[in-house]
Length: 214
Image (cartoon, rainbow, N blue to C red):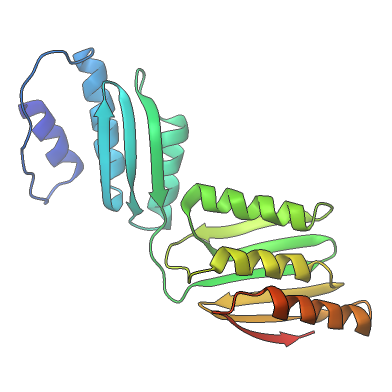
């Protein structure tokens, strides 16, 4: 008990530690278990709020990262830094909340550059990149996004629509700031420009405002 309390205070100095543990036999190898516990506490200390649980040596961890650097550090540790004997059962780490919530896409020269924030942690990033590849299978996609929570409702749908229509231009940019969208660029001809404008008006979620300069 004293070792666990000591590890906790060392990982999160200055915080009040409330001991609700019960003593019992049946722990896996004590050294292995304590190493896994120390690892989990270190990751928990990088979260603004979170929860870590062990079922034997299976770790479940969730929470909101303190900042972008902490988000990257925790995800890297969970992917490649688990102590010997510790197994990752589930991890749901989200990025820090940001405001205003900004996102951008730039298309030119066969390359689509995505920047700003992406919601939903690593799964949200993976889902959006997968949607980008579906929208533009022949385009080189450059991911410069940072994790962040606080996106308006329908954000991912709006981002997918913007990417899908943006790559129909010869070149262009799309920007999102909270629920305000703007799209600008050069279309191959006026017919294509009108088609893209119509598709945007029909597909952008109603909660968003749209300004186009196509």
